Length: 150
Length: 150
Length: 150
Length: 150
Image (cartoon, rainbow over all chains, first blue to last red):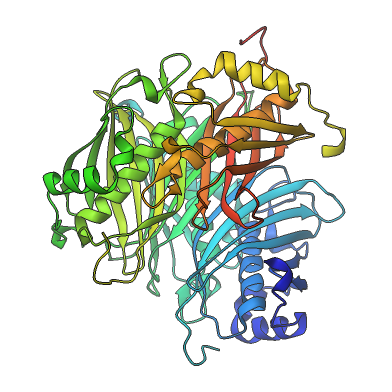
């Protein structure tokens, strides 16, 4: 299945869409970056930044949640285009190891992309490490296709 | 069980502990407030604030995650005292309705408080409504009792 | 909300519906019983039976999963009637304590009942105990209303 | 990490251990088969059998839960040896597509194997298809090492 699903949006188009429609994610400094998209996949980076920290210099859980949630959203948008008002309906996250005080990388893969629901998983790593720091699985609801939802 | 578990910490003690040890949650403005604790329960408020918003004036998912996670942490600390370095190992959250542009209330209840693991559930409401906006279930790992971890 | 949602089906009607349409749950002996339904709630019993056991006389995880899943299904059916082909799309279960070698009781409460999705939580107890043995949260997809769903 | 974790148990040893210690999984017919183990991975098969069916010839959710739970257990045992009394503490499962009326294959991968907790994910397929039918993430608690746990 995955092989045939070329994304409809490029990294530049996704970045512009987020800048316009989700400017909130940049509040306090631009830290979320879409680095690549492929068939049913997305690769994001969360820059190391004071506002993502917890005591001890570790990355905060809510920041990792935000990264996972955004990675899923980007992977879905890339496939279905910017007509989306997709909303998260469920997200389950496991925190596995203490993150390093560094950028975090999120690798997202959609495992279902239906007309009404999309499901994906996200593995998060400290940059330069191949140990999974946190792993999330999430479901988005996709609204019925309408004209344009910008 | 619940009846016999009087909290070890008061709302004031918990608030001071968070101010000292989790000052990060106040970055950008003090919005998280512990309002009450009881046997295995905690009641928190997240004030309506620009930094918790998503397009359309709704509350952001990561902010609701942060509220749920904090409510669990507070409920656990209240029971076991400020010796804690408890960390979230799993959090599952269901987003049920669009939140109102208002304060959010979190009602947390621990359903297990073991020596190594604590599990609780959190129902979140827009202030003044009795419809659940989001519901979370989470597990914390409690480190082996040591001297002091404040 | 809950107050106004009187169930459309009685315990007897639900039991007959399951006997006809989900006879599989009775394979190996009738152990699942609907005991009560109310507005957005259902109360089920899983009789203690050899086929639900694990080594040491404890109840098997898959049996508790089956009980939780069925409790959600019954609570939904009770509200929307037997036109359903509702299917589970997500179920998250936390196992909290070792179950006693006894009947298990499931208390289910729907926290959302939309046109397309229903979400509920289920607390499971060993009969006669008020300690939660396992807790589940699940989401069902409700198919578009049509004439007949057998 | 994974590269260095050669399993301590072979498929034959795991099969014998399950036959002795978890004979319950074979109740009603031997349908669960360990097919391969590797570093932090396990590959299982659930044979198509009447007792795993739901109306319409599809595979029952509780059977898929049982398969996912067993795959995690086998992957953990393979790594730490038969000294285990590991128990599931959390399992989250997403049902993505209607399973075919065929054998199901489970591919499990541990993403954390700590001293106290192990976390893994399981992708389930209908035999001969590469579309994921269900996906689970689960956490096991590993008891403190002691002499023997048979």
